[in-house]
Image 1 (cartoon, rainbow, N blue to C red):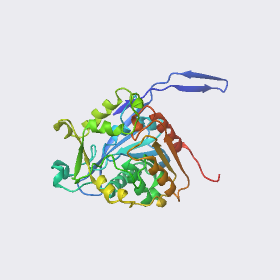
Image 2: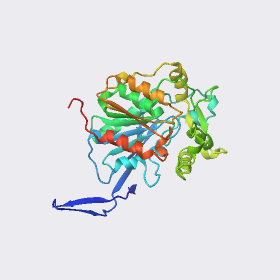
Image 3: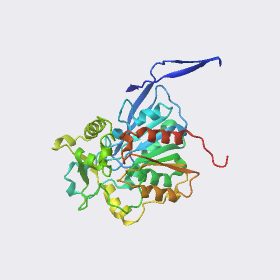
Image 4: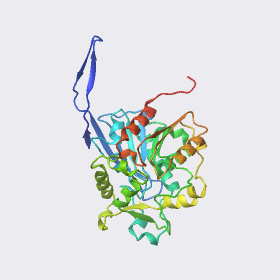
Length: 348
C-alpha cells in the first residue's frame, strides 16, 4: 500500500538565486507483517512506513511505537487526521517507522480467553508478557534492517512496556521516548472501576469520550478535539476489534493484565522496574490536563532517570492524556521530532 503525501520543495540554484517550486507529491510505502512472538501460536501485527523505495536506514533513524492499555497502535499512531498521522509525519522526515500491537490488541493474536465471557478467566496480557512481545518486534526490525539498536516510543501503559524493556536491553535501544509516562500511583485509576477483574474489559465509545475529557474545564471542551476527529477515531477503533459490532452499543475488548498489574504494583507503591537501569537518552512528553497519568508521575519518573546520558521533558498546555489527537498535537509531534533528530553529546 502506498500513501501519497503533499508538500512543497525549495531548490537553490548556483548560490545566486533561490526559487520555490511545487514538487511532485512524495510517496510513502506501507508494509504489514505478522511477526512470531516468543510463545508458540502468537503472532504480532507490525506496520511499517518509510519513503518509497528506501531500504537502508541507520538505527538512529528507525522508530518503534507501542500503544497503551486500551486501544490498538494503529488508531492512535497511524490515524490520518487533517491529512496525516503521526506515523506519516515521522516517515516524511526520513525515518523507518513501525508500530506493534501486543497480543490481545488490534490485529495481533487474540488469546483464546477473549472468546469466552470475561469472568471465566483471570486477567490476561500482563506487562511482563507485553515486554516480551515488544522484544520480538524489536528483534524483527533489527534483523530486517541489519542494525544493532533502534529508537523506542511508548504511550501510557506503553511507557511501562518500553521503559522496562529498555532497562533490560539498553544495548538494543538508541533513544527512548515516553509519552504520558506511568509511575507509582497515588490517585485513583480512570480505567479501573474496582471489583473483580476478568480476563478482559469492554469499553464503549461514550465511556471512552467521558474518560478523554475528564478534568477539562467546560469552556475548554468545545474546541479541544477538532470537528470529526473523535468520530473518526471511534469508528477506526471499533473496527479494530471483530467482536465489537456484536454488542449494543458496540464495545471494544481490552485485556485486563494491565489492571491487575496496577493493583498489585503501581497502586501498591511497588514499581515493576527501576528507571535507574535505563542508560540511553530519554525524553518524556506530557500534557497538563492528563487525568489518567497526572503530572506527579512525570516528575517522579524524571527524577528516577539517574543514569541516562541526558534527559528532558516537555509539558504541553491545554492537552489531555490523548493530546496526540487534539488541537495541540503538533506541539507533541515537533518536540519529539527535535529529540529524535538531534545529535547531542554532553560535554562537547
